[in-house]
Image (cartoon, rainbow, N blue to C red; front, top):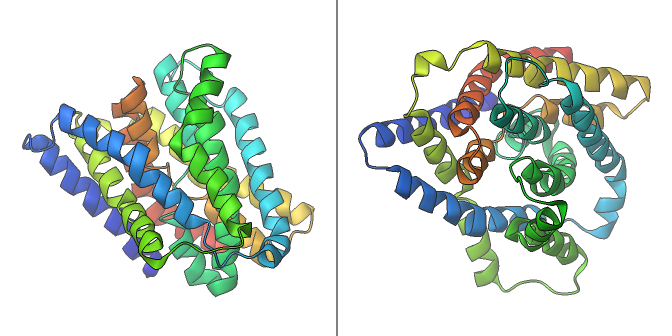
Length: 300
């Protein structure tokens, strides 16, 4: 029930953004400004907050297996990206969007509550550890899908990106011999908590510029089939073969079964890719996950 509630919450915020876009309250200029605020302020705070101080060195050691699995999943996503989208269905801009959405799904906001409902505090810990590879890849290989400059320029952009530094500082903070003052910690968490709401509003606003009836096309259905069903089943099979602990395996599979990340549309809009296609991917994959997540849960 909690899983269904979380998914409906996401869809409701998207609808809100859609209405604001249709009414002209959230214009393209306003959307661009909100996107910059999210990427340069809100998301870094959210990323840093995910590396909580209570994640001790001992806990990190006990989570080594799920951490390795998380990095392995990202390698697998990279392999899928080599051939899944190289066909006539997708334009060059849509390929960039599909590749990013394969690397990065909504395993943060949606994934952690679902995982906690299945596996409790242990699952929540594994889920937080599993987010580390996703955060790193999101702002390295993922972000590079939207840049069309030289590798030197890409490295420079990635090395100075606030979200990259949020990951670096977050990992460093885990082992730091001090704690942030309560007011600073609260400010970071409060700012980071706005990520989902602002991201979904932007997605809804982008979606308002295209016909909803065109969202369910062969491209979005093709992506949803792989992202929500085939990829999680492949990961489930591989983890069974290598004998990964059932709880760690379940956390990994549930994480892999989440729909496209909300940042997909925001980054596509910011860097000139097909933002409308990205919004449709998020909308359709989130809608279908209402049915596929219970199916994956039954398999587990």
